[in-house]
Amino acid sequence: MAKRSRVPASRLGRLARLGLTAGELAAGGLSEQMRRLRDKDQESDGSIWLTPGNARRLAQRLASMRGAAMKMGQLLSMEGADLLPREFADALGVLRDAGDTMTLTQLRRVLGRAYGRGWEARFMDFDYFPLAAASIGQVHRARSVDGRDMALKIQYPGVARSIGSDIDNLAAFLRLARLVPAELDLKEFVREAKRQLRQEADYEAEASYLERYAALIADQPEFLVPGVHRDYSTRQVLAMDYVAGEPLFTLESKSVPQALRDEIGARMESLVFRELFEFRVVQSDPNFANYLYQPDTQRIVLLDFGSTIELEQGFTQHYARLALALMESDWSAARDHAMAIGYLAPDASEAFVDRILAVLELVCEPLCHPGVYDFGGSDLMQRARSAGFDLAFDGTDEASTPPPITLFLHRKLMGSFLLCHRLGARVPVAELVRPYLQRCIDGG
Image 1 (cartoon, rainbow, N blue to C red):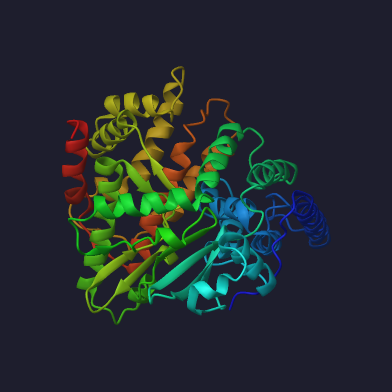
Image 2 (tube, rainbow, N blue to C red; image 1 turned 90 degrees about the vertical axis):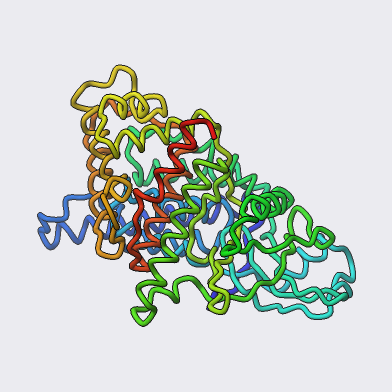
């Protein structure tokens, strides 16, 4: 059960929380240094800051802050697989599941600002215990006075106006605490993170994406997107249909037939390719909590479109051509498209080009594998993490910073892999993706 705690709404209050966190991590780092000196631990030659204990301290503080600070922690827990030791990224992984919930006083105050005095009269029933809590808001079930069964996504107070300061302060904190490589340029990432999070905090924009996405997949009845109730929605409250379903992770059980897990995995992979290469509209937060499964209809319910991104046709065509070149071992074409995307600088040495192409080939392993790819039996994530970590920290001055939009795209692709891995799905990925790649390249 999530813990109730007051969301720090002022910039000063949020900065103070980060300052306290910095002090706790400093103390944790000094403690680790003393332990190594005392125990003469020659094997612990990594950073004294990147310890599981410090990760737990950071996760606890970010979970209590919510907002952009917690969202950045979530991004680090996934994208950090390429930048942080596995134990540190895994400890931060708790942020992907849930944060603290608002106090009842704060909840009533937020609803009063959204609906006005006497807001309770708009509802026949309102469940004060949230169904879910995340970085930007929490979800409550309610029934309107005219009988509509709804899920209300209610934004935490202060998170929208603190996005800029939260991200700037946390980026500076990560630098000071040496939690990211000193040579990594965070400026573009910070700018894109602010843009994405401001969009995620705009529930009117999310309502539009819900409606748009529902229209895009109207020809796929195996998926369901909740309808929007505009008359109960504001910039801080998003009212949707309440849709029943089981958490998708219930399908992880070995008692679930392998054929069903394979089918769900194939369905989710195909949807990723359709989003990227056909719609060019991508729901970029693949958290397991954003999917439900309805056993009776075998439909998958798609939730949370706050972090939806739109991609330019030229960008997706280069991505499609890069994927196809890797699948066909056409290294010259792969180099050209990797450079066009921004993975390679024009003056990159041949040795560095070979390293980048090797990493890209590695992460595209499911696409390049002939026949059925066994996600459940794959250790690709560990190998990709190791390769990315080595590349980030080898001290080379050739690394170029790809477009920041790729950060959110990588999160989607990584999340889809993890989802299929947890399901233990076996999917003919190459067979699924080829038609989408070809249509995208042809301009369809």
